Length: 395
Ligand SMILES: *Cc1c(COP(=O)(O)O)cnc(C)c1O
Image: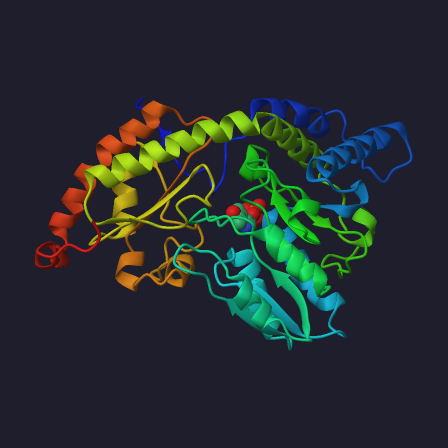
C-alpha cells in the first residue's frame, strides 16, 4: 500500500504508543473510582493527583489550579461561560478576537442571547490583534478577554504576554486558548500573564476526549457541569482516569522533545513553503511569516476551490485540510481567512498543511512534487482562470 502522508496534525495527532501503555492499566485492572475509600480507589486517586501535579508543574501552575475536562472545547466553554456567569454582577462585556476557535467564538455568541455584549476584536492581515485596539475596546463593564495563543488555521502566535500585562493592570480576567501551543512551544501561565488557559491532549499525541483548564487561584468561575463535586466542585463527573494519565504522559513526552522537534519542523515548514511558492504562481501564504507555529503552513491558491484540492491530494496519499474541520463541508469560507481581509473567492481556495513529529523530508518533498500538477489541472477547469491569467495577481 502507498504510504499515507498525514499533514493534518492541527486537527488531531496520532497517539504515542507509550501513552497508550500508560493508560491501559486504568482501563483494565485499575478500574477504581477515585472517590472511593478502598485501595483500588486510592490507586486511581493517586494516578489522577500525580497527573495533575505533572501538568501543573509543566505550565508553571499549582496543582489545585488545574481542572480536567473532556477536551479543549469543554475547557473553552468552561472558561468563557464560567467566568461570564461568575462575574455578571461586575459587568456584561466580553472581548474575544475575531479569529478564535468556534469553541470560544460560538460560546461568546451564545452569551449574547443571555444579556452579555461581545466585542469581536479584528486582526491585521497577518492575523495579529492590536494592543491599541484591545485597550480601546475595554470598558468599565469588561469582565473577560479571550484571545487564543496560536491560531489553529493560520498558525499566527499572538503577543499573549504583552496583552497579559495590559489586562493585569486593569484587573480583567484573561483567558487564552492554548490548545495549539501546549506541548508545541513553551507555555508558562505566569510568563503569559493569563488567568485561564485551555489545552487538549489529542493535539499533542495524547488521547482524544480529554483536556484541561488552568484557573488561576482567585479567578472565579461558575461550574457548567454540576454533580458529585469532583475537581473541587468545578467540574462534576467521575474522573476519566485513563485519559488524564494519558494526557499527562503525552505532555511530559512532548515537552521533553519540544526543542528538537520544533527546530526540525521549522526547517521542514520553510522547505514546504519555499517549494510550493517557487513552483506554483498565484499563491499567497496566510498568517504571519515568523510569528507562527513551526508546524503550520496555510496557503491560498487563486482560481481554485479548496475542497477539490483536498480530494485530489487525498487521491495522491496526502491528508490535508482547508483550515478548520468545522468549516469544511460548509459553503462559507473560513471566518479566520475572512478576518485577514481576504475576499471570499480567494478564501475558498485555502489549504492547510500541518506537520508533526512523524513528518519526514520525503513527505514534504512528495507534497511539493504532486501539488503543482493538481493545481494546474484544477485551474484549467476553472472558468475564471483564463481571463485573469493575463494579469496574474500575487507573484
Ligand atoms: C482542536 C482545538 C480546540 C478543540 O479541542 P477539542 O479537544 O477537539 O475539543 C479548541 N481550540 C483550538 C485552537 C483547537 O485547535
